[in-house]
Image (cartoon, rainbow over all chains, first blue to last red; front, top):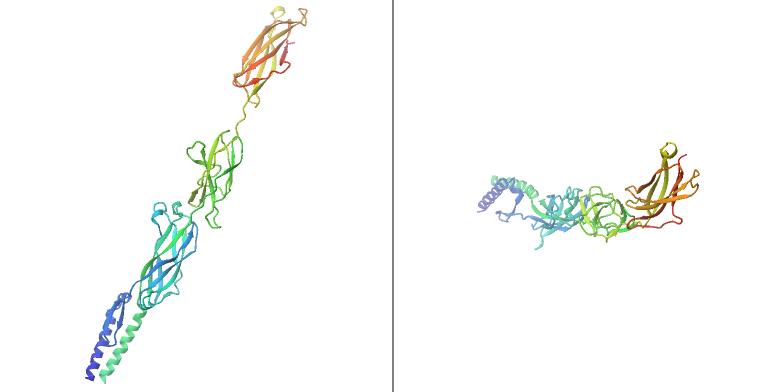
Length: 161
Length: 264
């Protein structure tokens, strides 16, 4: 019986190695694996982090640069996430200014992420959060109809544990 | 023992493979950032600091709404007091607005009212301010009186001897109003009187002839006394009056007169 348990344990470990190898590449990016005390393996999805506007980059005008704002990054995972890339898409005006603000001239740029922003793990029922700064700018080409507009830029976040 | 060794090696291998995998796990996501734009402020409604018959000098309070860096410029627009299209005024245009908060709009019509408004400008942004009250140029002065000047000339029209000799006198009248403008269509009335000489009633005034003319577009007209004989040594034209609708003529005392002497 003692030898049999060792054989079984070895088999589980070999299976584990095979799983680790088979789930290489892209799968690493989206899956996390937790093992049990008996050597059984199961997989679960790494939940997406999210960002919501925290500080509005207020006061844009033609020629403005470095107008500071921030988003709050929320991490629902039970492990901390380091945001290494934050890519802002083209800014779009609110619906009330869409027809007149044909050229926004607005760009959003993330803070320097050479040192990633660490978003703490979820604790109890509360997601971990961290602020990620950005700056907004507006070129002189901004259309007359952009006055008073609110601009939104979708940010795509890449985080690692 | 071999099995135990094998298990140990495999376990070590498993750890070696899985531990780096934790570091590469990614948790991606999306969200959004927000920014808001200012609104360019409007300048105050312009007021007139001075005016002439053909110009109005405007001044207005500066626009606000921008940080201290950008220099806001202004374009001035004018509209007839009764309404109509807004057109660029002063020296500024939509393409090249002024940065000053004052300007003089020229080439206007005397005694005419206009409305103005200021469009503040920064890059492509524009903000139209409220329009002014009706601002007017000064009324043109109205001519009320007129005056005239006379000048006489003479010429020999027939140099034959005796009764064949003839000469003529001509008087040119120029009428102007009190503003210095020539007056056309003014009717000038006067009387010719003649002085005789050469032993034929020497020094006496021999009769009179009325004569009149109407000024042309240059405010000038002429009266003539032709065919005077050699015994008429001078002809004098005395202006009796000038009439022109809307203008009054204050006749000087004594009446204006001019004399042409017979050519020597």
